[in-house]
Length: 156
Image (cartoon, rainbow, N blue to C red; front, side, top):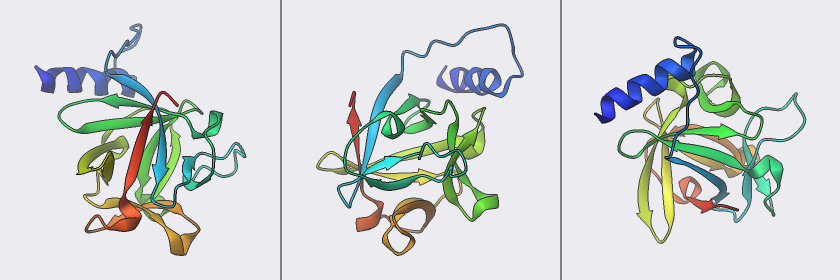
């Protein structure tokens, strides 16, 4: 049954089925706090769609909607109404520029305890708020270390 729901969600999200509205009871509004105690944001400047963990407070740009699919699999939608993906074309940086959710726009949460999670992208790599890249989010780590720890703050 979960597989059927996931398949229907992907069909609806891709636009293959039209004329239907989707109400997903498994959606949550969240903010994402990185290891550096800063919130992940999609900057309002439309020329910059890469996610970065550099905001001390939660505002409109730091609010996301996650949809729980099957198991620990989720999609993440930014306040721009675009889905987040590990953009392989852009070097595995996380971007919020996809109007529909498909394979690239799915992530798996790994519970690390202490209210923290690691986020694994569809490329099989963990998402990192890479300190060497100005805390840009990139899915390029084999293992979840310190930079790959996130807290999902519900209803910020």
